[in-house]
Image 1 (tube, rainbow, N blue to C red):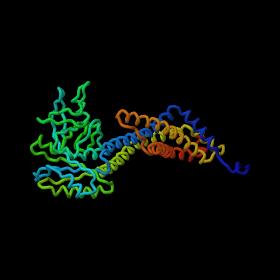
Image 2 (image 1 turned 180 degrees about the horizontal axis):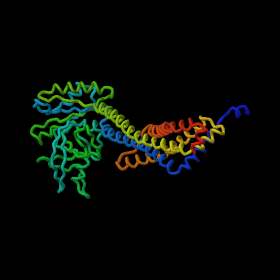
Image 3 (image 1 turned 90 degrees about the vertical axis):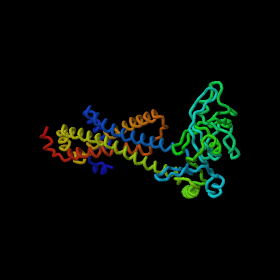
Image 4 (image 1 turned 60 degrees about the vertical axis):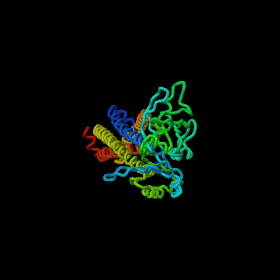
Length: 403
């Protein structure tokens, strides 16, 4: 035991930590400013990573409503192609030809103004089929949705916002009410529960009145299908189903060419963009952290300059260059650790407040805390290494002479 103690040189780690804390306390405001620089840099990294993570989640969440096994077919206009969109779609024939598609629904849209019992509102009349309720996962608050037997009936299923606007405080819109639409009366057979719109779907359930596709001929002389939404039986069949659906729609007579969108591919693209955005924000936070590291180096260099005589006395009493280096590195590490802890709290609080004000649910970004705190410690040690080495290279005689 005695040999081990005799073979050990320099102060213990605890003693070095105590001395570094005393030195930083004597520096006063300068050490506080360096600590704040590290804290601000760490807070910037953590806050930006979490804000970017939650913003990306919110943008992706809006696209997840259609599911990963959903297809959306559209008929865009192209230069030189004056063909109209398809006017009808045989759903049963399509499902027979493409068995991998479980549900499918065409959409024919018509904007109109509705009046009912003294109440007026604007709405989108959407001609569709029975498959829409499964594709968009609509929930009925009252009544039922359209069925295959309602193709020639004047039935209507009303969205939540339209039903609310057409009702009175004491007398809401009810099943059996008749809505005048472009001179025709449509009987209300269902009211859809409120559902957030999806950017990929061309119809907002809350703002729509759903009627059979055949009923759209009463409202427009030549109704055209604007889009088709479909649901495959399995996620693994999405790509094959998209190719088959595009080929099938290309056989429709006198119809524009269809483009089939796969939401899963869009989600993957959004995820890659979100990761790139997160790296960009982390880089911006890293710049703030580097500024804090420069502040640590300036404080430590001034500390070395003011303590040259102390360094000389320590060396004259037997302290080695490594002991002096470790002492100043411990001071830089202490500043970095305390600044990182303070910055982590500030960064999380700032990100949480921003996210909640934006109306998003808050989720902690993976690795944001370890990345922010470890990078703060690394930056502090990196910028504290040069002053520590400068102090360790001082010669005792020169250090004692330069008081």
